[in-house]
Length: 404
Ligand SMILES: Cc1cc2nc3c(=O)[nH]c(=O)nc-3n(C[C@H](O)[C@H](O)[C@H](O)COP(=O)(O)OP(=O)(O)OC[C@H]3O[C@@H](n4cnc5c(N)ncnc54)[C@H](O)[C@@H]3O)c2cc1C
Image (tube, rainbow, N blue to C red):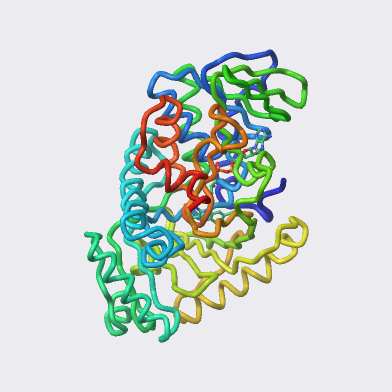
């Protein structure tokens, strides 16, 4: 599947950072991770770091899936409000999901520090009410987050104007948030893994998977076999081909990035993640070299050619929206692109075995606008599953929640 269009800035900026070999003979290990995006990289890192013999298999060059298209705002605030999750699953589970995502920011920071040079920065996150009628919901969300101990501030209209230079009826300001170069992050994790002895194969496509009570056998399109005790399917949106019933719908999101702006030009936007209560939402962040990255205008298009045809128009709409908020900010898109992402009904991911596929086939579906945060949590969750240990998120982030 073609997951992005135009030229996603990360892949253009970084190029092919390293050549991994293609699989050229049958291979045996403890765990095969299918997919060399940020999810596969974080999971392989977690497993290999805890003594598992892992092989990562990627059909193209690593990082070229939706990871290359991601705008990579790292937020604990998921697309579904805590108060809405609480209505579905109860306040305890809603708070558990939010708290876990908050922990994931620190975990991602630690990983970024270890591999270095991935343009990771801590940034607060500003969530503004797009319309006056969204204010009561924002207020209820604020109160719920305060009740659960999150470090969050309520900004009335005047404070938003004074601190961030635009007009919104109100906003929530969370201290906890970050940004990263997701493509570079995936590459550097996989390069470190290879250096430490983990097998990473690119240009190797898995065509079939057979699972028995004792292990799994994966067959490539070239007829080679990988045998392992477990397989982790971190194939992004392509994972859905291995499930009988759909659990998510694919959507497209659009983004543009500017050239580096003059020092100071971005003001508070230089180190703040911004998004809004409207759906689909506008979202923006900066990069370490002073660019502004703007995304949004999501739609239900799932046909690459039709999506690609919309990139320029969508970029113009995004530009107009940002200029509506900050009319004095002179912006010019340098690159614009689109990418496919999947959305679950409740905004939560799926990690773990599916009842139809047996206990040795582990799905890693980091779906939703916070996919990277989920991937970090999924790494620990799947390791616990493979080591037959309990994990507090296993029920809520697993397929079992569909039975509730
Ligand atoms: C435009 C856009 C903006 C986004 N913004 C954010 C954001 O701000 N914050 C955030 O947290 N998340 C965001 N996301 C979501 C985030 O990017 C994804 O959750 C994340 O990149 C998914 O990574 P992945 O490794 O699971 O999937 P991918 O990066 O798609 O990796 C899966 C890999 O599996 C490979 N593969 C597939 N099938 C096979 C096979 N049969 N054999 C071998 N390999 C195979 C693919 O080639 C691919 O490289 C955004 C996504 C998009 C598209």
